[in-house]
Image (cartoon, rainbow, N blue to C red; front, side, top):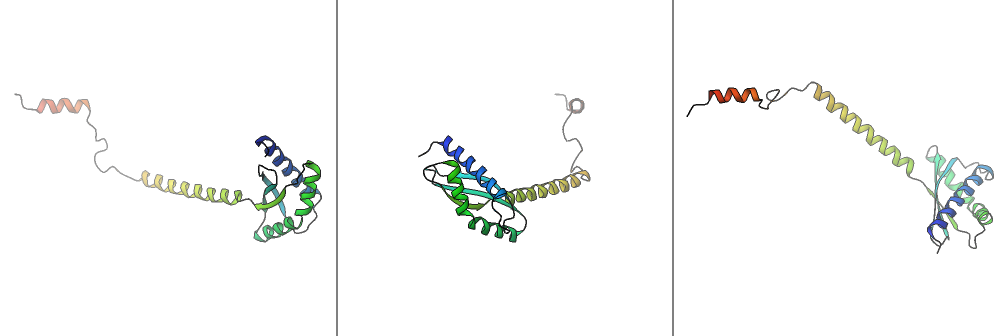
Length: 151
């Protein structure tokens, strides 16, 4: 088992290696505009999960996933050469859900802003249900005391 610092360093190194390989050496026409967002490695350094995003529509995402699967062996051998570890980790490419989650959060924030605008619009034309100032003031209390029966 590797300690967390070694695991983190290895994940960072694998991320850089794969990103460079995708940019410079992998010439698959199916490969779209892909970004490696994160790499997570198991504590025994045997398996690496590579998270990626693709700019484009669903077809571009599917084509890129197929291209990454076909280039997995080349990428893994390059990771083994450049890292020099005893066991080269297996690579699993996973589409990152971050852009979809961010889009969903933006939609929720937009809906909240629209609801706030509607509330402010209603508040601008609203009137009080009773008096404008329902609280007693010291001047009113003196007037009430003067009217009270003397006993």
